[in-house]
Length: 277
Image (cartoon, rainbow, N blue to C red):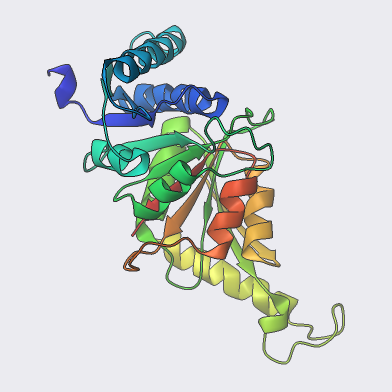
């Protein structure tokens, strides 16, 4: 098969520390899936000088990727246009887009850059946001976590998470948060009939309903009902996972990110995959 016919993991290259981490994540994922790695740089200006500088960035990124996974085919392009929309267009149907959480901003308080935010909000396929700091060492069994929101969670996100766990030979943690205060007739915590048992049972039923027809025999799915807010449960899950998978609703115009997703993208301790649909 010609190299360009392979599905790509597309990575936005901007020379930032987070961008390099995204290249490392992307080449690992391409290796797992037997895909190619496609590196894309969108220069801030036009002309031959900007293109030449972009080519240098891509060559450096390709060297990083090749040193990490020498068997992965690598392609690259310097493309003009608005950064986020150009990266979105470069990610063909069925592929994955990976971007750094922030670019070369000098603001240390900026945890999520505009390119990552716009790519997550507008992409038609999965987008993985990678922080500039490597995740902490994970002990024990490799782990992928997926957020299960409401009673009808994103089937696309669940399917993506299952495949990610299979590729990593990892267990899959299904995280479903519930707020005790929303349980009917909720009395003081710890008192008889305080609603916690009911909330946990309800959360287990939601998770069971999601994975009943999808989980494979070789895949370990661990149900994790967590009392509290969704964002706090997901951030806790990110401290133990190699990848956190979340769904994103579609249909809003212009596309927007909900408050939980915004918090998690800024503060998660592992790469976050956001899957539309």
